[in-house]
Image (cartoon, rainbow, N blue to C red; front, side):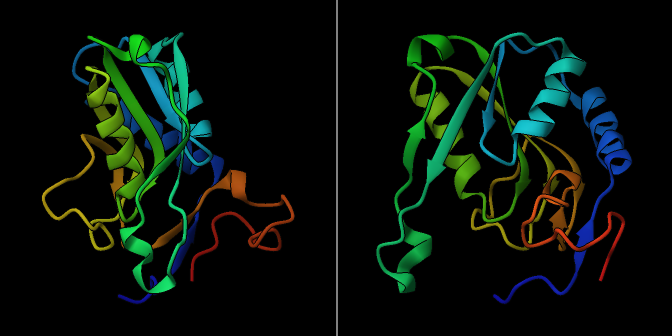
Length: 170
């Protein structure tokens, strides 16, 4: 599959709207949150504030590139993950910015399940067209898209999108 045909750049107002779409979807309360770095840090903080969650844990996942031809088959390596006793028997909201291939979210969800926690997955954007897991999708998502999403925290930081304005779409 080739890359997305278009790119959408969001404003902070767009992100606020997505948070407002997500919050009413949640059924029941969560005991804690696992935020996937780096993309999930900002939406995770916003959701933690909206849900009054005080226990926030981080998960950092890497997929080491061993052979470019088989890059999608790389086994996940957890660079950071909460201790099992922090998750055991608890309802955990796992947050990231986007579900693209789904590898990162599925890896973290499986890690929470392995610790005997009850994970519920949440992203701002779900891209069903890129997902490697045809039978899986996030439990909660703000919007479905086929575009490459650029969030406002990715703009004006000297990176790839530093010269673009929020709200830009091509």
